[in-house]
Image (cartoon, rainbow, N blue to C red; front, side):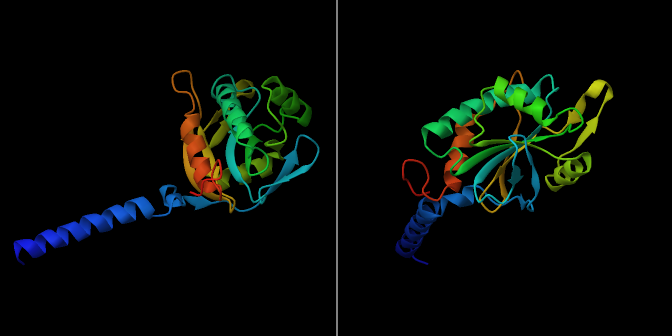
Length: 204
């Protein structure tokens, strides 16, 4: 191959790479990591919550007696809640779903009181609970590990899940701790990629 031909080949290759990079659908930035089959649980507001809501979701597991990561995560998620409200998608296209790991102590009344203490908005934040068997079965669908300890405390995984409207897992995040708060900016950006029109009418 001559130098001229080789130079032309390299130019075409670079142009092709840049075209793929810039025009490849942005949702490929969030590959499908798995999927979660539909389930129904009691919404503590008095209705039945169904996962098949055709909305983008952030799913987290919690229990009201958790002394650290759960309340710190919820505080950070209220920041995300406000940002989603400002963009007009909270409850309409995006939901936050909090699943109790401790149905024995986390009654509907206890969870309502807990959620209200953090000023969470039930319009888009679904606080749900099931029986102990239902909780174990649903946790297994997320590969979420937990174990009850003495004194009504739990050891549990700290993974949060971003689901698209088809209940496919598109991203995983660690819950917050004292030294590492949630990166709500990144989570918001990821959510935007899964909304058909994006934010501000921008198509992802």
